[in-house]
Image: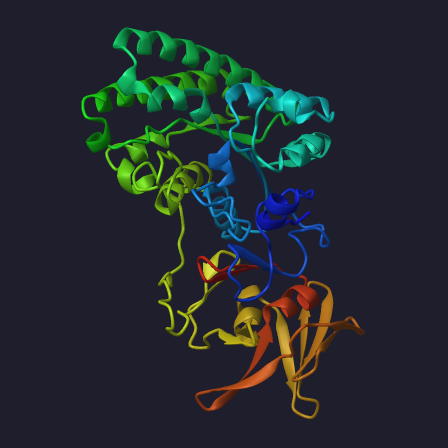
Length: 433
């Protein structure tokens, strides 16, 4: 089920993903043409399930605006998945969730039973909490099918202590920190055991907790909190090590080290109107890099990442086919709010065959057991002899001395059965057969 953050936030309707996948040059984080990955083709899909707190949800100050779409580490991981093939994300980040709440939630997911919001954690303000609670049985199935499970949790366990460090005596701080870390370790280990009971083999990546405040804001207390963050990491490492096996990896994603010394640029702790420890966009990218490098050994970005200034012409779009970025003089074209690609480039990249008929101004393509006829100017394509509607027709574009057939992204999914996703943040289309 694909549901906009806006609808979840404002209307409280049911949904699983925190972003909308729409074709074109829209302003959502990730846009998709055609069917959801693998749903109709039966092809393998790399499935990511993200559990945890507001960092998993991609929260930033102002996110309660229903027009704001999240673009956190989980959405970036989905993009990284597209570099490697068909991928899907289910994001269940709950604002305000603690490790105790995660334990309760994963217990219900393990049992496959509906849980009440208060059964997860009392006092949660996430407006989607009723839907998340009701979805526990469905999440059981999704968790069982997952290839990668990511978790951020613990910030809400220690945030009050961290934020009040200046007013707490050192001895009291140490006692409270030790109590919180002991409880965190116990809760998280039990939650991971719940997850492992549902899915015996998926890779589980648990983030440690970064210290959010810069030294300039903390003074002498900076050393105290950095030491506390290191102890938090040690507990996370101990928990994951106790469950980790070669066949079923459970690994700590060492996020905290990426924030050390550069907290002011990676969090909203300064300049947000009130102390807010959530990551900035740069911070979320740092977190995504840690997760991606653990899973795939790298974090990829397209060659074209320029941000378009207000009033300027859109920057070029990148095309990634089967993980390989196309390098072609036939640049993508934005027309009527839709992205069009040169058909020949796509056919060459995936190894499909095609022929052109001058009399009918149509291209016949054979790929994967399908024969697709695309006619210039027609709002229908023919798939194995059956007409299927497309939103915008193909057209001819003069490139040098040649006329090139340009095809809308939607037709690639509708006609050829490709999985096509467009990230407006990266200005990149990901095409996977």
